[in-house]
Length: 251
Figure: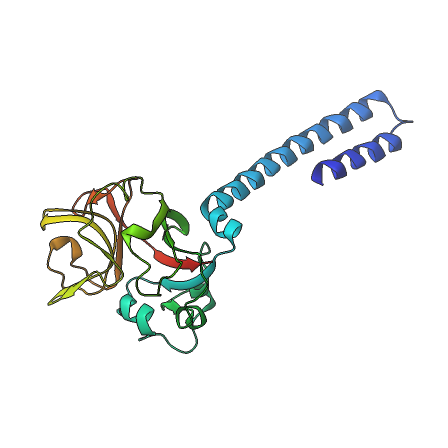
């Protein structure tokens, strides 16, 4: 559209100066060439931004995913209890909590009660992890004959950006995770645990401030940690980062 308008403007300008001298005509052509170059650069930036957006959320758009839950870090409200039965979620939640990909205000977890309390007829459910409002990892699960509490199971995995998540062993892989004494490792996708210094996994929502290992002690909970690589990582390594939020989608 921009290019068409540019060409139309060029034709009209040429008609207006047809009776003028050649220097005036050349000056006009030079000026329009500069405008054309600027427009082309603008179009490249727009296309690049659109491509980036599609890469981060294309799978959501293509399959018409519906947001079932979004967890928010550092608000000192249990993300597991919020998912399970809505504990700690106010009646009115900010619109920013009901979406992903935009830097909108959100100070609560979001629970889609209609979906989670009436879990039926879904073919797939997915966990998406976000950093800087961009999807960094996801795991898609088979939702057929599942419940809203048992779908996060290694045997149900269909695909993932963590390439070793189906081939590597898992000692804990569930929504409930490990919850005993001072441990609150929920939405826990863990491979092995030999000691606090020798434990590897893919994702965990740490639901308290006083965990058993140094890597799960925090000033505010919940904290969402994930492997930045395409494989599992040691929870103590620099390859572990904290997510801005995570989302659960169904379709």
